[in-house]
Each structure stands twice: as C-alpha cells, then as structure tokens.
Length: 237
Image 1 (tube, rainbow, N blue to C red):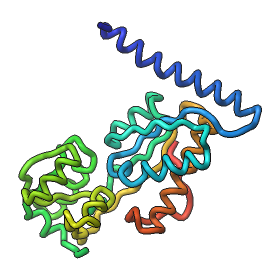
Image 2: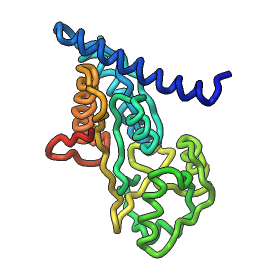
Image 3: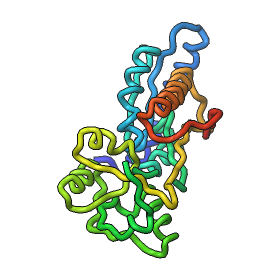
C-alpha cells in the first residue's frame, strides 16, 4: 500500500513520464515523416456523446500513427487534469451557459418536477443561475449524477429534466423521449478547445486538436450538434 507521500510521488512521476514522451515525440518529429504519438483528450460527457466516435474514425483515417486516449468527465475536473498534465487536449465549457420540437419558457419550466444532477456539476450551477433570474428554484424530485439513469427516470415518467440536445438526440430520434427547447431566455454556453500553456504541444497533440475543431464545425453544419461555430478559431491555452 502506498503512503500519502507515495501517492503524491506517483502522480508527479506520471506527469514526468508523459513530459518525457512528449520530448521524444518532438525530437522524432524534427526528422519528418507521419505524425505519431500518444494523445490524451478530455471531453465533457455531453460532448463525448456526439464527438467520440467521429473523432476516433477521423483520427484513424488522417493520422493512423496517433494513439488516442479519451477521458470523459465533468468540465471542472478536465480543467484541473489539464493543468496537472494528465490531459493533452480538452474541450471545456465556460461558466455561463446549454439546453435540450416545441418551446417552453423558463418561467414555466421551473414549475415542473425535474431530475437534475447534483450541485457540484457546472451544468447544474448554470441551471440554478438561470432559475434564480425568475425568482424561483427548480422543483427537484431527485438529484441524479449518472446521465443514463437520469434519462431512464425521465423515460419512465418520473419527472422532466434539462439537458443539452446532444445528450438526448438518440432518444429523441428513437421516440423514447420528447424535447422542448428552453426559451425566454435561451440557455447558452461556449465550448472551448484547450491545451496546456505550461507544456509544449507535440505534432500529435496539434493534429488531434485540429481534427476536433474541424469535426465540431462539420457536426454543427450538418445539424448533428446543435449550436453555431465561431467565425474564427479560439484557442484556450
């Protein structure tokens, strides 16, 4: 069993070994040739649902020498892991804004019984902030952090919920869920592509980041990811 000091050393060792791998890849890249290396990518759950498979397919076609490790978690966790060097590239949400037919005003939505994730989730804090503008709070039946169980509860008729469209698009297409778009106000948030400013990015990292950016634009244009692309690329480092 590792002691507390041993656990801390192991975490630092993982970062050092990853940095050594990055250095090795950078040296090899100077010799030219195809892009190769390992890239760990962090995706929020709702983004992972729409982006993971297209990303795996696209990277295999464009850069077969790059090995991907996809990590799915909350945006807040991904920020910390990016800072620690455990992630090379991440898609992050800003702290302000998303929502998952017909329309329903927020003033009406807050009166409905709902299942929502716990308060530690950034998306829940976003929803609470919007609800507070109406002078009310959500009528919560239960807090459910696991997205599959949350959707099953809604499908069983237990309550409603609020989710980004990407999180429920398959269920909507299959007829197991029905969605109405929240309006007055419309909920929005920005997804940002981020890399670490403290560690040099390898060719593999930049290839993966560029692939994510192009896929996101394509998915939005095809209507498979509800939203709109920014005019230019914005990089958070």
